[in-house]
Amino acid sequence: MVESQKVDGRKARGEKKRRAIVEAALRVIEREGIAGVTHRSVAREAGVPTTAPTYYFATLDELLIATLLWSAEALCDDILKIVASGSAREIASSLAKAVGCNRGRTLAEYELYLLAGRRPELKPAARRWLDLAVELAQPADPVAFRAFLAAIDGLLVQGLIADVAPTEDELEPIVSFLIRGRDDPAPRAEEE
Amino acid sequence: MVESQKVDGRKARGEKKRRAIVEAALRVIEREGIAGVTHRSVAREAGVPTTAPTYYFATLDELLIATLLWSAEALCDDILKIVASGSAREIASSLAKAVGCNRGRTLAEYELYLLAGRRPELKPAARRWLDLAVELAQPADPVAFRAFLAAIDGLLVQGLIADVAPTEDELEPIVSFLIRGRDDPAPRAEEE
DNA sequence: AAACTTGTGGAACAATCGTTCAGGTATCTG
DNA sequence: CAGATACCTGAACGATTGTTCCACAAGTTT
Image 1: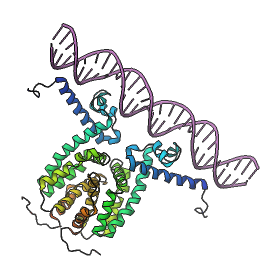
Image 2: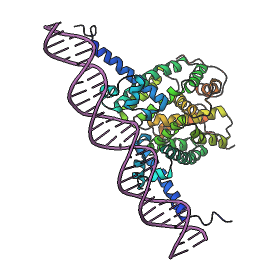
Image 3: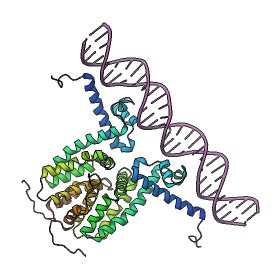
Image 4: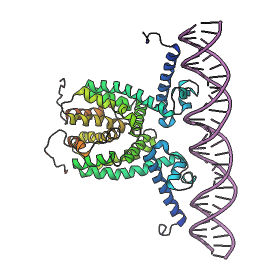
């Protein structure tokens, strides 16, 4: 009854191509925004025939949804690593990168984020990093932690529409404030 | 040399219709998102002929830009009133309304917000409320104020993708924390 | 090897898009 | 009241869209 051993070679390639299409869709969103996503543009980006996206995804919406789910998962890993590290400087550094060299990716993630605002079935995926962060951090002060998470989102969004992306050095004091609760230079170890 | 007294009646009606088109575009964005904005859909919403939007705005982009500028101005007034009021409860109440009964409008504003991330010429308009807030508040602790403004954005965005919109009572302690800097029940007057 | 299942891709469809343009209508001037 | 001017719009064009369809290739099973 071993059924996961000998998979159908056709389905295996199919899954691979399916994932390639999702990745291509994410690249298109990074470059041109959600508005630029069409079956044809994604197909061109992925190097597959025009009808391939239609074959793998019943509708264009379904492709967008799959892209959000995939992107949300990747985002979760990134953010949790950052938040778990705990150091204000590391967090600031990651934020600076998100609105700097990874600007396109961050922009894409927030566009998909807002898409969840109009598709209730996407909300769980979009909120997953929030839920996970709360679960993992087990913060002593839940209110302060909620404020911290909100500010992370806000700093990223505001960083995306700034003339010049904020630097790590500009962000560090703000992150510090959010972690410590006040502008107090004394560092505090937070290991449980 | 009085030139604003007797305006051309034709031009006056034109301006009125122009504004009606922008307002209709905002309503379409509230309802269907930026993706739903086409010359035809806006014209239908505004009750004007199909080609009217093209007549008043050289391109569809220009219509979106005009909508963002108009929406940003309205947002500025709202937010500044809120921030200036200072009371944590009032701020929390306004935030709850923004993600509650005014959900559609808030969603539209953030979609236009992100649009500015891809159109550099829109950035000043999108950031205007931030600049104004900093200018008006003249905060004693700029770092804490920056964190506060970021958290406002974050709370709104996160409120938009929550299963059920957060209530005023849930938001109040978070806002309080951000204003006071720590979970300290003692109120502090902040008049210069 | 034959039969069957699954993946693949080019052509073509109706629908809708942004935009153009020539003619019509309202308003102002003399 | 005529002429001029500016605003306005319905019809239409080419381009692009999502999607369907069908013939064919690749792989699996009997």
